[in-house]
Image: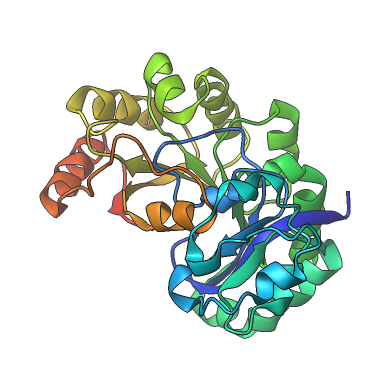
Length: 301
């Protein structure tokens, strides 16, 4: 596969690996995390995103829609969202930019062209490109093709994965990626299934397998109050990671409410129950658990 379904290209990113980076966010994810901060990356198909405060209720989107749908005038999606085919006609007709299409096909050549625009910043900051999502390795042909191409240009590359992927695919990507950002949500399988929508068995086994063949892995853990920030889960996670080779650092990512706003923009349900952002003191306590296990630990990033 020489093309991928990309929903965002974020330039000058500082939180997806070292240095200044260009991050390609790909559509489609096998998990359904209650706290997901990129809900527009869950489904594989394009989606229309509505920013309510930009809408002037001109009705241009309704007139342009081939199906004549009441396409979220005022920013509020109606039941018609289920019939939306994401053709983009309403996006083109919107005079204020209140509507955008999350998801477009991008070839490897187009990704390389986009990524090389900031090559000078990569060189001076130690940055590069990152493939994130969603789960980027669900589109492994595109990602691996791009990894090879960027390596040919001497550009550092990273893959941000949830780990719920085919083992062969993961190890194939490991041959061409300079860095892996590997997410661990919860150590308890039942709770992982409850909060993330799938078992963690393959995720943890894949991390172990990856650590035997790759020497640059950043384990990233979203810290979700009341879900995975208890001492028992933190210690279990730290014990697992400390016993692996190839782990350069652990990044603890404090939960934030950005995903809630994004869910409203695509007409998805809000998280239930609502989740609070962790206090700075709690993040420092969590970090101390990993540091006590001998792991280089950061908050954020």
